[in-house]
Image 1: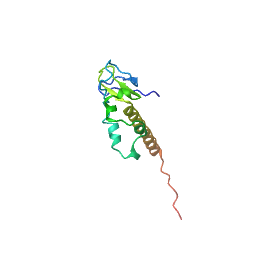
Image 2 (image 1 turned 135 degrees about the horizontal axis):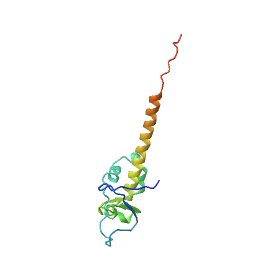
Image 3 (image 1 turned 90 degrees about the vertical axis):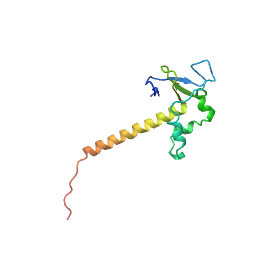
Image 4 (image 1 turned 90 degrees about the horizontal axis):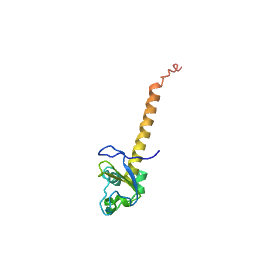
Length: 126
């Protein structure tokens, strides 16, 4: 399934841009990730064994955080033109959403089994 992102501000499909592709002619313009605090920084504070796999794929230095267009890819909003999501946060967010979806499906299956489970009465023992 193709990974797509929705703008957290205006709920429009965001555009995928590859490394060093920018919407403006100013290549030195700061392109900051709008969800970095929620995803990457949260993962960075966790114990390494609890971090998601995607976190390990991206190691951001301070300068990288200001120029996300210099990483592998990023998403940008064509509508409000001021919202971006970096590659690392895209992968972390997608992984976490997928994990939550699997957990929810597993819980629903278990609830369904419990709901249809018939209590079997055993004969009294001698």
